[in-house]
Amino acid sequence: MGQKTHPIGFRLGIIKGGRTWDSSWFASKSENYKQFVEEDLKIRSLLRVNYQDAGISKINIERGAELVVTLHTARPGIVIGRGGTRIDQLREEIEKMTGKISKVNVYEVKQPELDASLLARNVADQLEHRVMFRRAMRQASTRAMQSGAEGIKILCSGRLGGAEIARKEKVMVGRVPLHTLRAEIDYGVAEANTTFGKIGIKVWIFKGEITDTENNNDSDLGPIGFTLQSNVPSDENEEQQTEASLEEGNVTTTEN
Image (cartoon, rainbow, N blue to C red; front, side, top):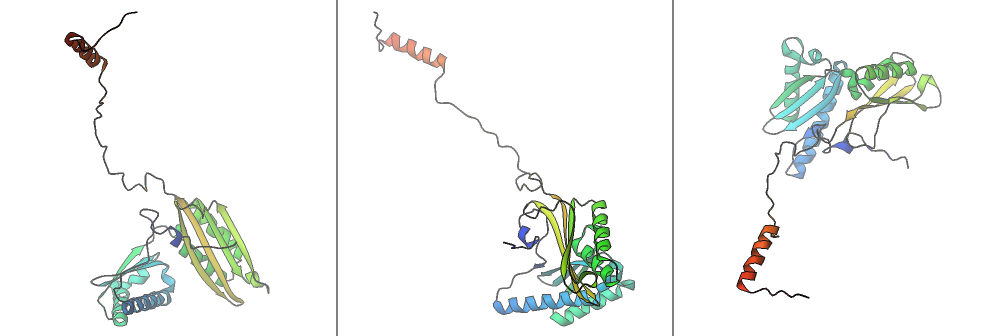
């Protein structure tokens, strides 16, 4: 009763071409595993703190011959800086922190209204600037639906409006099928630091269902041709065999 699961982790490896793990690496030893996890946490916290105004949606970390950090942001100019100075400083900080050769990639989020993390952060910023929570939630849901979302759910919890008793308020537009595995659902969380405490914001965005034709791994296989041969003799073969048997006298006929 009341058990929840993470909608992104629930669908990892199920939707072809969908979202994958945010960290992609393999540790052969337990000591390396602990070190890699600690480095990932430090890198993510560094980016979240130093680039709060950059609108960072997702951070991917890959480890191979070099450490590759990929940022998905709505404002790539803030991350790159004038002439690429800020991104060079960021790469140097990551190399100093990890002691490995690093590379930083920056990708722009084309539709921030359809990104759950950015939408939750937008609602949190409005709450910090004393905007009424119902108005902020309604405006965010309207923008998402106008941008092409099939459904959205926004949940705010805390001392809403400065009330002394914390509560939850929800806005839902369209449909958000959390139990459907083929549904492409984006999920984001943000916190608003207000004068009367923290307010948590959760956002679910339903972008559509992945059909079987799109998720079929064997779609590029061609048809297989084969020929069936029957072992049962045809009527003509039976007549020829009967005539041959009559000529040889192997078949006897009786008349009533």
